[in-house]
Length: 300
Image 1 (cartoon, rainbow, N blue to C red):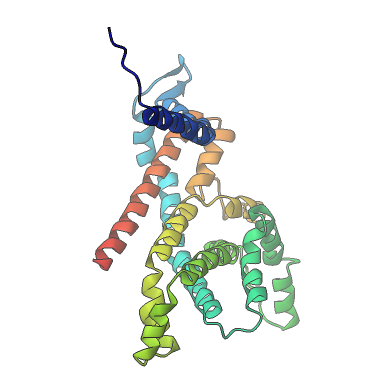
Image 2: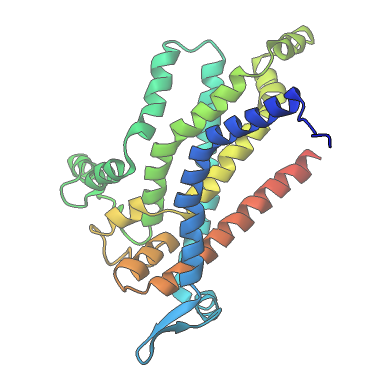
């Protein structure tokens, strides 16, 4: 009776596979514990509802149906959609302008300027919102004091008409440097042969930037745009802190994320909050996919 022997090469391959799994295991454990398990539990909670009589009971998709007709939630989604359509193009435009200027090689103290543009991103979001809350203050803020010193009417930057713009200004100040670094790194990865070929053909600096650099930046711009979609629909820190200064302007449903927080931790309606969170995630996925599909079609 013959015994089949495993070739040494196959044993070595199996050993390498086991070692590879050991290297990947920490990531998989964290991924499952911090993402998959919370999502599964939130999905489970969203299918139940707490009733006055009978306690918590299975409700199926009732929470999702209620969320789709929730006017406060829909108003918040429309508000952050307007925020995205206005703030993101301005932020990415500034980031692209700064990246091209730094990559041109004609700017003095480029390293210091690059650090200065990126520095606001290093400031924690809560600290940045608190700082700008002080600047926006209608009574003792520097902007109000400067306007009064010049004899001009002080703008109420925390009014209902200007609040969304004030929040957009904070977010733009925070994340322009972050997107600039992404685009600048992508610019540094472009082969210099393309610039040399364009220069031989008679292209100047502006023509090279428009016809060579910006087209090569499309993948990086798409990535920054998708990150901006996610960040816009998850807007929370800035309105949550400004709410204390203008409670009549920013209510608990000013943004979908703020509404979800209010439902879960103030109203203690965790089941409905879970359903709203899942719908918000679905909106982010749909918008991100639509943006990516539109860019792909334009490239084709």
